[in-house]
Amino acid sequence: MRAVEIAEIILAGFTKHYRIFQSITAKAPIAFGNRDWQSIQTISSMRIAQYDARVNETIELLKTKQRIQPLNECLWRTVKEAFQERLVFHPQAELAETFYNSVFCRLFHRRYFNNEFIFVVSSMKQNSTVPVEAEYRSYFPVTDGLKPTIRNIINHFGFGAPFTDLDGDIRKLVKAFIKQAPDTHHQRHQMRFDILHSPFYRNKAAYIVGRVVSLSGIQPFIIAILNTEERGIHIDALITQSSQMRVIFGFARAYFFVQTHAPSALVGFLNQLMPSKTAAELYNAIGFHKQGKTEFYREFLNQLESNVEQFIAAPGTRGMVMMVFTLPSFPYVFKVIRDQFSESKPFGRETVLARYQLVKNHDRVGRMADTIEYSNVVFPLTRFSDELLNELQSSIAGSMVIENDLLIIKHLYIERRMTPLNLFLQTCSDDDAKSVMADYGQALKEMVSANIFPGDMLLKNFGVTKHQRVIFYDYDEVQYLTEMNFREMPKQSAENYLEYSEVSSAPQDVFPEQLCTFVLPDPKLRALFLEAHPDLAGVAFWKQAQTDIRQKVMKHIYPYPQEQRFCL
Image (cartoon, rainbow, N blue to C red; front, top):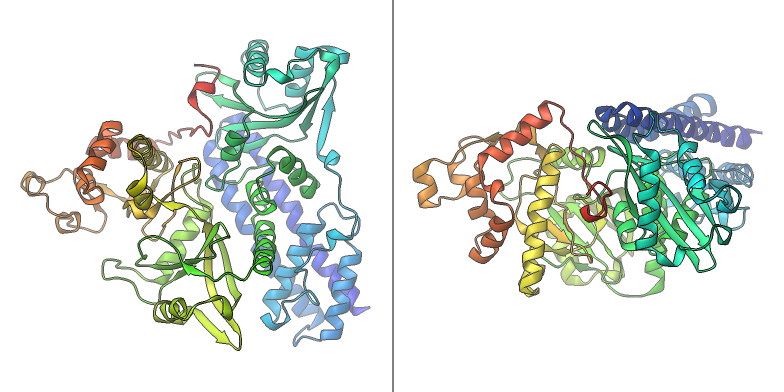
């Protein structure tokens, strides 16, 4: 039957994709054991790129073997049914649905993008879901004792090299548990440990994720393990606070490498530990960014159905490259590239696309917001006021189409909504201003350590999260740090406080002394910034950062407070 053959070809394409995805992910533990940090970055880019390659490969097979165009509605309804039948007990059913959607949507017109032909609503709601127990293993201290059980847990993973002092690390770990989570301090026969099968690898760290189940309830935890030249493999920290776990799994960090046979079960377990995290956020965190897009879009459709509020222009200074709008009750913003840029932006649309892709493939070190990229997104036209619609037509007319009662945006980015830093500073307390200005400088340093030069460092391009963490979100001027030319300010220019643009003699020239004047004209904010980070105003810091990168000195950015590290 032709429909079955088509369904089988698409499923085979997904199976190949998932096999390659897992084989790439499996390189991370090897790189961790060998301290091969450059490979971590390489395989991260490889893993992101291979999804589209498999979709395109599958489409070519369908075109050559099935001659599928134009769309035969009756045939493709049957194809979807046949495909869905094969997912009833499939351990990656939700990912297979998304792969199917990707294939179909690249083949046919968007008027067919409904649940009759694609999986707008997941079939997992009626199919058997994989239980979370499939992704973790339970350990019982009553049989072997507390410390031997912890040793068994850690030894089970085999991190590619022996621990320098595992017994000493375990003593510190138990002590930290008692201090941070005293309610979990029970007799060994009164608890069990549920531990996810695979560690989560990112940069120089591996994370063991699990929970203590006891008479007091459930206590989630993350054990951070590092492999350094100075200390070898060792346990660096214990994280038990939910807020800190959310930072580790945050939207401003690179995707984890974690082996999983049943992603829905893994996400289900993580969601039990971090209930405020959405399915989209958790799929993104574990590297399934296409599934994250699918889950996000379902969240968005549910949000539209739940109220009748209108879209508004996003609060803050209007961008010179992006037009940004938002739905007030939905914690995200929609960013569309403008048809024309300001004269101060001497580049075009293709440059912007390339720079956003650069960030997507790069280590975001907890300081750069993840972006979700969509094409041909449909919005109800009635949700846009005449005022906003006029602004959109005057700024992004080339990226939008109005059809009957629909507004279609041809290409856009979606990011987590934050309070722009410049707006936050207008109303915050003096203590908060001091804190966020110090964190703004720290954000710059952490991005620089990852070979990222943000370009436009104006405060309006940074956001403040609800935990008052400063995150960069405007990427149209992002470049590699090593491509910049850091220079001393000419003495006469420094004395006259000429504007940065006037003293730059070449596009790649940067004068750190002038950055504070240009970016921080408010003397109070400039003083707070320089008090915390005086080195950022000098050439020496930036040149040394370039030297470190060229010599492949990779700094580790800790996603948890320094005071929780065992070595301190």
